[in-house]
Image 1 (tube, rainbow, N blue to C red):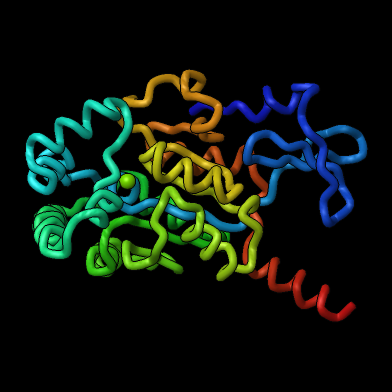
Image 2 (image 1 turned 30 degrees about the vertical axis):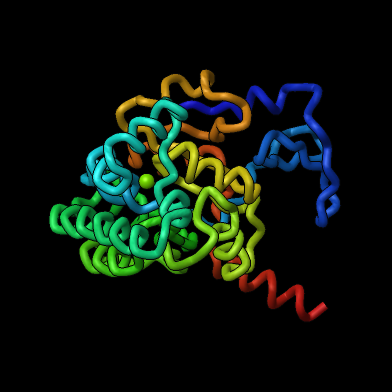
Amino acid sequence: MHFHLKRALLQASAAVQRTARGGDRRQMGSAYYGVAAGGVAEKAKLRGVVFDMDGTLTVPVIDFGAMYREVLGENTYIAMRSRNPNGSIDILHHIETLSPPAQKKAYEVIASFERQALERLEIMPGAAELCGFLDSRKLRRGLITRNVKQSVDIFHVRFGMEFNPALSREFRPYKPDPAPLLHICAKWDVQPTEVMMIGDSLHDDVVCGKRAGAFTCLLDESGRYGAHESLSEGLRPDFKVSSLVEVLSLLEAHFELTPHSQIDREKISGAGR
Ligand SMILES: [Mg+2]
């Protein structure tokens, strides 16, 4: 696990913002830490966690390379890969540029790959423990995926715990647009700065979280993204873990976990003033 907030806290260049509660907040990328009168850093409040599904809550079983080849055709696939060798191919946006019959065919290919993946669906190690921990601390759990609602429904049944809201491909615009994450924050009535987005895609999940102003955690099981520090400033998540198991201690160490019953009490007492 890597953590760069502490180092950033020491940087004199940190911008100071005035919060609604009257305290100073130091801005470090998308993350905020309150600074108490004595200059001691307070832990940031965390009220909810939003997860990506494929490759984060479930073990990746879709062969994306094979799927892209079949959807795009070999020549287009190679051309798109060579234009963006390190990045991911944005297949959904590409499909929207095709003629209606070609779109239909492309979605059928994707649906067939997704059906095969569902048959082999496996829950990510540590996912159940992490969600159980969030429930025990009364933190909210949400989900954003570029997969279809039917897959989310099947995942919910297999996982045995529901995420609410759970936004699928039917919600537009998709990640990395921050809209789905901002939608969940609005539903929960919390600030994006009080939420963490966890996912295995730097370009979808981390970018979505950063654009929304949330904390971000990249799950990089294989180490394919390299060292945390090597990631460019615009893409670097607040945290990088190689297993969901690491997230429990990370949350306890760095955040004040705020149960939603406490939020409700604050609201009730605030409304009476
Ligand atoms: Mg994913």
